[in-house]
Length: 149
Image (cartoon, rainbow, N blue to C red):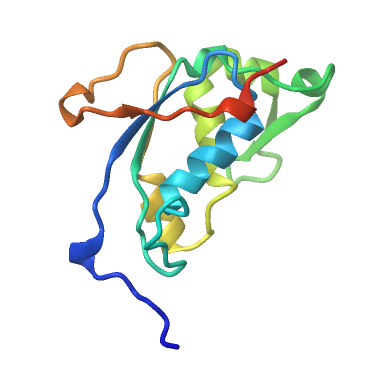
């Protein structure tokens, strides 16, 4: 049996919007990464970008599971100079740049290749409830297993 490879004309990209209010960060990131890769489609091919566009709104209202995870988890960055490492707790990062926290969580679940860089380009994250992509008519993407209980 031959391996199916979708052609560029076969790929249709839809737009989805996710309200992150009260969603757990990791569970949100896995579902968003699945849609960005296109694994929800029957024409999925792991070597092609078959995924859809995803808009995440209310990123500042995401939930973190665990009691101490927000204070004991750190994001590190390095300037490239000796001694240029800096760290920031997850709770501080959510306060300052909630869109970067969501983007980083989703990016960690995508391939670390040029394919993954193309797929992360289809992710739009906004801290508030408004987004400028109304012309694309995004459909709501429900993630029932990601609600904080």
